[in-house]
Image (cartoon, rainbow, N blue to C red; front, side):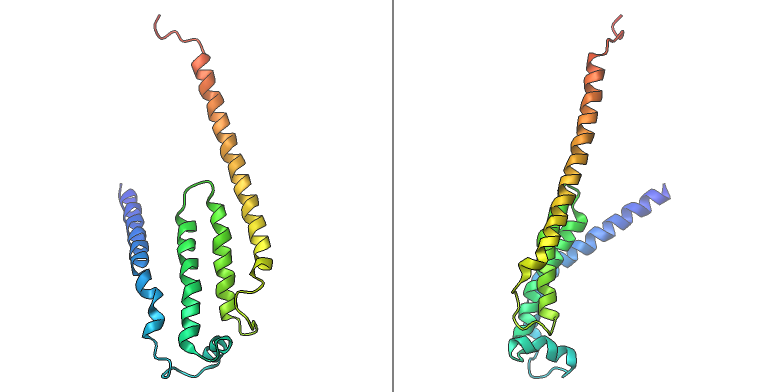
Length: 160
């Protein structure tokens, strides 16, 4: 009984952490507004992040958070989804992950170009996983349906 109650407490704690994170997303989404663009540490990472945006840290962080938070929301959705089609969530999640990568990669001159080429393997993998899951679910449902049919057609001596 103690093990069961600790599992319930862990599930409740995990659910509460997700709820607090999701409730704080609108505030975290606008975090870039609180950054002072003139008073930041001049480092190689910051310079490489701001380079595609004309050296403007404010714009770089705005673009970064515009890409990061949809990725985090779809990641939470993917990890908590209990439906058979949850593999399809990999498609938008992969798209947002590639967009976050293009913002962080200093060698990419223009952001949001050629994303479709990188999405092809993600889409193919997600479609394959979704169809495989659909076939498994359908096979199990057919198996349960045939067992139910056998039970219904089996003669019963219950009333004799």
